[in-house]
Image 1 (cartoon, rainbow, N blue to C red):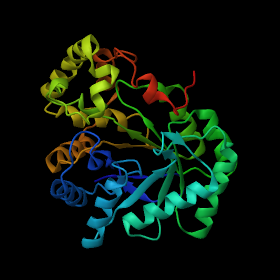
Image 2: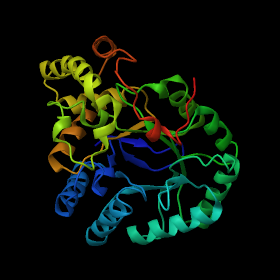
Image 3: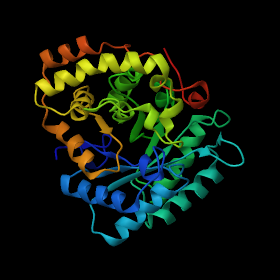
Image 4: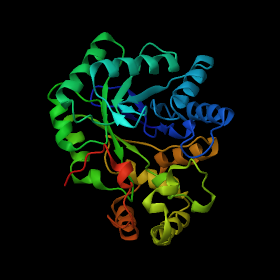
Length: 327
């Protein structure tokens, strides 16, 4: 596996990482045995960057990763997140006491005394970003975290945060049908020496050889209410994406690997973290590092799936709360 640097002064990690949200059951019931097999496959492939969070299955994803690394020699660089509070109602907190308490729970579940990258999962507008980053910087000094991450933020927030302490990574959704980061955030990360960690580069499974069937999605599947997967929006989106699937097939590539390869081609500081708990699917995704996209291929893909092609917003209004919009 080729590697990329997790921030200007951060560790080298596999160019393709692994998003572990599905380990927590966000796309249907999780299977411990299959999750472990996926982590083993990740080690075999050189997929060394694991991304998890407290809210992924209310700690289940962290727990599964912790159980695995206790039992197996590993070379993973793990990232986790805090900042989303689910009880008694969903809210956000970037307060010092909350961050410390959340980190301790993550350390316990993972069974480690240090997390290489720790994110604020969402901004808490009641806490200035300068203060929140200052709280996180205390944890860096103490050796409990290796670097600070921010998620779903605007470029202006990154500028303010970086004035307080270097930001190792920013994580936002980025794919062929979610291109907002192109309007400043990808560029700000490159300018400031911050890795851009792209989640959902496969469009939550839509950029696959076979289109996902919304009618077969389980009750807990996040996509059941997602605007791009519902009604006429999905019919129109899938018809357009079918041309991309054909393009991939004609070139001998699997569709998901091509979608990830497109993300990699957008900048050397970009690290996509497609999510899966299937060893076979992860093997397909990892093939992205072997797909070389030149100017002509990128232009052809842009013709098939031009910026802004998707029908429907990426989130519902409720799902959008806490994310920062810009431009």
